[in-house]
Length: 304
Image (cartoon, rainbow, N blue to C red; front, side):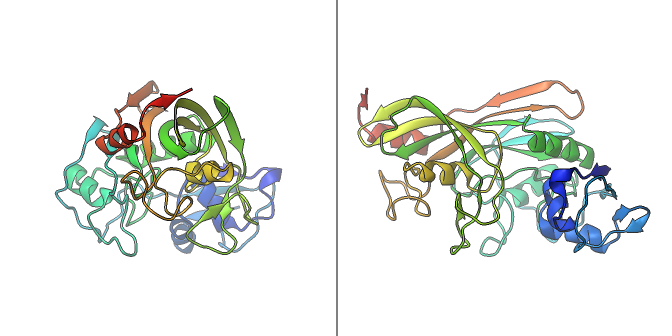
């Protein structure tokens, strides 16, 4: 595939820019660059070179799934949709999406490897085969994975141009005054705490969240959130930035469990995308999980 820079992209490190264009981790892009899979004007590109407007780069993405040391594990999956190109999982709360320090196995990727065998795209690298986007460990709900590289590229393009729609439900602390609103605040790494993201970061990327109130309770609000972008911890960071962190969010909210919940009350409820093979829209939805319904029951009667 070929990607061309615009004037707004000038002056960035090539590996950083390509990471955003391809929806890959920076380390995965660096491996492509080290292997000579990224060329410019017929020559291998260097990961440290600066981008310039109008320059075109050709990326030779792997055509077969990468061999991985991550082992298949027979873990039950709640499959919402599956065909030869994509699989959509209703991820339970508490499951990590891919292996990482502290979570070497028992992840969604381990389960997908057992369920799909070799039918997962290799673009995400050896630890993230098939993974197009992620949700946090304590966030439940819909997540899509690609079964081949063509599907992965097509879905990643939809993530980039915001045509892949993701709608969440959450419970936030405090009572929101407005029935709906939009939070337009760039997000980047927190300047002093690397575990957190922040709207006050020095190197931030655009982030937009639209929210709508579904119900109000004494001290809490049940909201529906639609992502226009997909930054790390986006809903958690944005709601905290307006003074309404998610219930149970020990990182961005109150530092102790609330209403029996340790970890954010956040569920990826709806997913809409254009199918990479049929080019037809697919809309999927799932009910609220038991933990979320239990929280709502603990909030007491609705107000307002």
